[in-house]
Structure formats: structure tokens, C-alpha cells
Amino acid sequence: MKIFCVVPSYYPAYQFGGPIASVHNLNKTLVKKGVEVTVYTTDIGLSGKVSAGQETDVDGVKVTYFDFSKIFEFVGPNGWQFSWPLTRALKKNVKNFDLVYLSAIWNYPTAVAAHYCRKYRKPYIIAPRGTLYSYTFNKKGWKKRFYYELIAKRDLEGAAAIHYTARDEFEKTHSFLKLKNNKAFIVPNGIDLSEFTDLPLKGDLSNRYPELKNKKVILFLSRINWKKGLDILAKAYGLVARKRNDVHLLIVGNGEESFKAKVKKWFEDEKVMDKLTFAGMLTGRKKLEAYTGSDIFALPSYSENFGMAVVEAMACGLPVIISDQVGIHYEVKDAQAGLVVPCDPGRLAETINNFLDAEGLRQRVKENAEKLIKDKFDINSVADKILKEFQKALNC
Image (cartoon, rainbow, N blue to C red; front, top):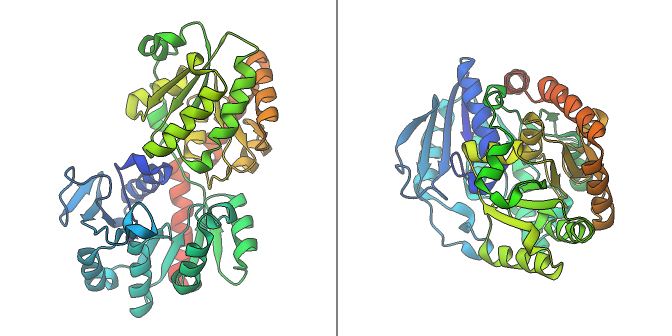
């Protein structure tokens, strides 16, 4: 089977969030299972670090990064990733593959790929990855509604199937956009469990950040982004930190400077800056240290299609607290593998306090999370499920 994957950004451009890692994890696992995977993407976030227009072997995946123009920056900070070189390559090569997989939807690369798929009658699957939730859809709503009616709706209707990564995403997206006639399937993102065996020691994190010594560490690890609920976290942490001196909040991630300044102001207003560390973006071993050196993980997002960081935290044995707007909240709650709260600062603060003081509960949650990870999020079983869905699309 020859799979053609078209995405707006790709590994190792981690600054654009969890899908960067999850899509590459899937692709390289498919390659190990004998599937030929070719990726077309842009060099956003990687300019000067990759050879534009040249096919590169990345863990067995054939990846070509294309230059793009920023002439459409008025529609968003990434300029819609309009690329003539990518357009020409798609027109020439899309018919050479069995199936096309499009990850994300509000961008030029996947829009033009869907166009050529329809033109050459090539089956394609779209994975919106949370971008069609009503919460994110309604941000800059008039622009997105116009784009949806002009381009995205036709792309979705022409797809052989829509790939959702969580039950929550499927239910809310289909009901919101009335996509009942579209074929869809749910397969989660996966992680390579072998990457979570030789983990750092708990003390490694406090050796790197001495202010964490003898503290109960609350970890936020994600993009510094408007939908992540950092305003909720700031108010909740203010309530927690004013009542106890044994806590420290570690914020790991990056984002636009203007928004990071706003986030810092929220914590300054709560007068907790002396109990807070902004670590910036961490990758590799340093990111694992953040997971294993913390006591609980908190992600109070307003909208989150899946939650790769949640899965990674659980794989590292870190108990999690997530909002009921994180895509995998059903799976976490059903397995009792973490605590799920509404997007409310008071409830989050109460849950953090109780969780920090309940060692027995944290241990039970960790054990349940370990089982959930093995049962649902092992990348090998995830890839097998995806392959079955790919075959169904080809047999339509």
C-alpha cells in the first residue's frame, strides 16, 4: 500500500503542537509494517533546518518540505502556507498513490491536495484533529464560516472518510456541522511505548530547577495558547498557592510573545510568581524529566481535540487532571485513569488540593492509566486499526 500524507507542518516542528509528533509516530510505524509512506508538507518552523524541495528520509518516511509564501498572512499568522512548488508537485504526483491522508483542514496544502484528489478520483481521508470543534470554529467565526462554505465543506463531503481521534471529537463535530452523511471512524493517536521505559529519576527535574526541591510540583505542558485554559489555571493556582507553601507550578511550552505576556500578567495578578517557573519548550529527555519529576499534571483546556501530553504524562506515571473539554476525557474517566473537571477555577483548585493530599488515590489512578495506555494508545495497535480503515476506504 502506498500512502500519501499531506500536512501543513511536520516533524520536528514541535512548536505547532501534539499532532506533529502523533502523525509522524503513525507514519513511521506504518513504514515498519511494510507500508510506503510519502509526506508533502511545508518548511514552516524549519526554514534553514531542512532542505526545501528535496525528498528526505525521516525514520523511513519519505518527507519533502516545500517553501511557502506569506502573502496570505492576513488570514492567520502562518499565511495559509500557500506554496506554488507544493502545488505543482501535488498535481504531478497525487495520482501515483493508493490513498491520500490529509491532516488538518484550515490550510492551503490540504485544500489543494483535496482538490487534486477529486480531480483525479483518488480516495482521500481527512483528519481535522480538533479544528472543527465549535469552540475553535467560532474563533474568528466570520472568516472560518466563509472558508468552510467556500472550501472546507466540499473537502469534507468529498472525503472517503473522516478520521477522528476521540469519541468526543466525533460527537461534537458531527452534531455541530451536521455531517451525518459522511463516513467517519474513530482511532486515537498513539505513542511508542518503548520511548517510556528508561525514564529519568524523579530528582532529575529538581536538580535542573532547584526551586522545585521539596515541593509538590504541578505541571502544565502544552502550547501557550488561548484554548489551553491558562486563565483558569492562573486563578486556580492562586487559590491553591495562597493556602499552602509546599507547591510549585512548572509551565512548559511556547507560544506567541504577546500571548505569553498576557499569561504572565494573569499569574502576576494572583501574586504567585515566586511559586512559578516558566521553562519554555522542552523536548526529548528534558520533557520526560518534567513528567517524572512532577506530582500531578493539569490541562484545563477550553477545547482540545485529543491531548497528546495527557497520554505522555500517563505513560510516565504522572497522575492527570484534565477538563471535560479535552478530547479523551471520556476514555480517561471511564478507565478511572485521571480526574476530569469542568472549566472552572474553583473546581480545579479543589481537585488539585485533594489530589495532592491523596497518595492512595494518585497510586490507583497511575495503575489505571498504565493499563489504559497499553490497551488503547500503543502505536502498534493504533497503526493496525488505521490500516483496516485505509483498506475500507480503498474498497469503497
